[in-house]
Length: 228
Image 1 (cartoon, rainbow, N blue to C red):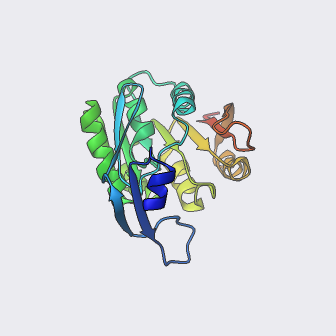
Image 2 (cartoon, rainbow, N blue to C red; image 1 turned 60 degrees about the vertical axis):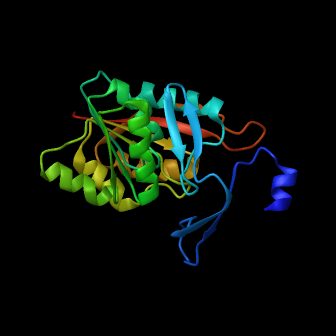
């Protein structure tokens, strides 16, 4: 801790996470703050965020605004839509879209991230945004059975892409538009192939260079339900 603070005085928090499981999940359940603040405060545009150590947040804020603007363009919201963010994390994308939607519902596995998202919604005055702990492939079918059918679904999965049960749940929910934010073009192509076989068509894609001078490029894709 002392060496990090000496070398990098701009660091505000040092935390240790333990993950003893053999799984694709990066973080384990236990996180200990070794030094510094419990949370990191950040803003994007007019949206305020308070982040816990396990929370995911894009590392290039200037390009993140451009990325989320591309998501908003792809979602083509009119103010009447129910938007579901199936990998909501701390609510970044959902809160970016909330001023332009009737309602936003976010789903996330990590309870601390959902707590962050709820706090961020309150701090940003987004009364139409709600966040839920769970798996999207389980919650989405439950909502549809209760007559709560999303108009637009946004997914921003890890590099491994969406799990097949989620892709099938998305197809079953039948939103008019899907917005897929990908950090891995190969898994994006694989997942799109599944969705295109379930009655959807791809009509819009926008790459965003998040890490200049590297090979990493995010892509925003709009997929719409083909009713013909």
